[in-house]
Image 1: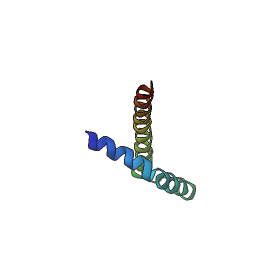
Image 2: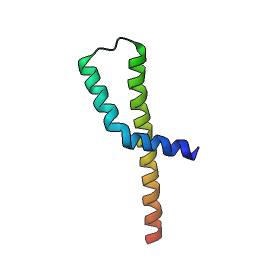
Image 3: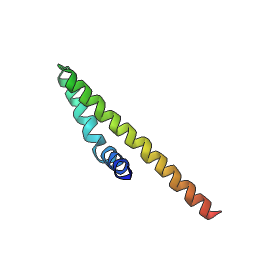
Image 4: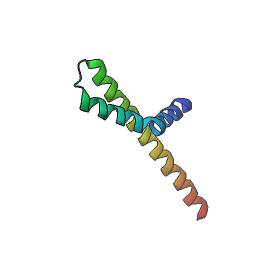
Length: 71
């Protein structure tokens, strides 16, 4: 489970810009002709959003631990 969480965070941090750039260029050039294209685009954005939320929670927990050590 820790590996899956790490993988989602890694994907969201390293592939967010390519997902969004390719998705926006694709959307501006083509209309979605099939549900597969639409669901793929939505799925990639959901992975990025989940990774962002998980990384945010990890970062807040690390900040809280550092704050506790200082006091």
